[in-house]
Length: 434
Image (cartoon, rainbow, N blue to C red; front, side, top):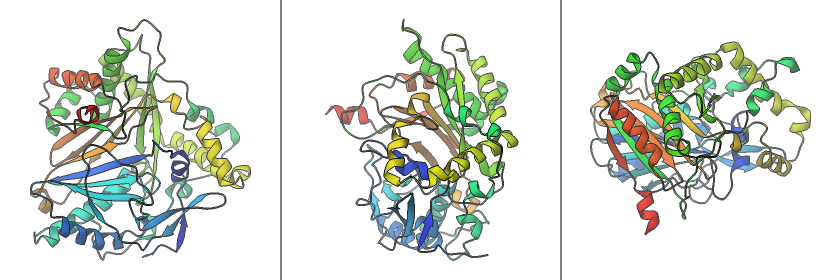
């Protein structure tokens, strides 16, 4: 059944937290980029964007402040394509994006889309990005076909695309089943380093052959996420903790779980939770042991009943009558000072494996690869993300510190395992020093 967005709408359950955590230096943003084989035509991209946004009413919105919660209002302002500043992931604000919660940019052969997490997660965003690139290639005159992998301009908008999948899968549970303590976590090791003086992120991409990477993972009896997560923790230990005298808390990675794979949903909004994976820096720093830690934790956290309880816990917090009627300004104070669910002191870094950006065969000849980046902040100054497209994997480090020792250690281990890398950087540490 087709559906259009009303003049206003609620944020999904997961999205409600993100506007409350925004400050002058931090915003939950992620970036999806498609690298083409020819220079981007800015005028054609602008035409493609103007057409594509009409297919995604859930993204044609402006974030507004209500009395008790933030909400979305329909946004009819012009949506503009911007030339990219390659040395930073800029905050998305009402002024610099005409009120939209995402931004489309271009740089040489790249189409770059930055999203504020309040409107969607990476899976939802990828449907918009694929549609935009498909429309762009069509306008250029290329013969491309959707093969039922693209939400094309003019195709019907379904109710499922706009639904809050958290509420759909919520069920009332006894207080004893609420996973409050589990979501709370414990203090984690914090990555140390000199922060950039200016706003911006250092971004390093490591491209490699997907098959080569998977062959290494299969030889070690693990998945790509388990291998890269173990390597990430080992690199943090070797670069930051190994030669230090003082004791350190556990290295704790946050790994997003795409709930659509477990609770079937076509929502283009947020529908993910996190697995919190911890390793002791004095007992667990062996690659095989870290892989086992990754495996056992992810296996535990991918259990459907366990995830149901977590969904119920997060929705319960929203529905609890005392929370519902607390004014928004008090909620902001509470969420900024409380570590009950989202304490920044309880995370070392984020590792996010998007998976495969699945394109129709007719589009692949015009696309070289894709990249996926997660914004970092002063408290958790390094994140790792990975995406595969066209048989290429792109492993991306995004950081707020000048030091690149962790990335160097990580690349060294990949090389020792026989993985050939092509490394690119925005050299923000050099520009920041000028």
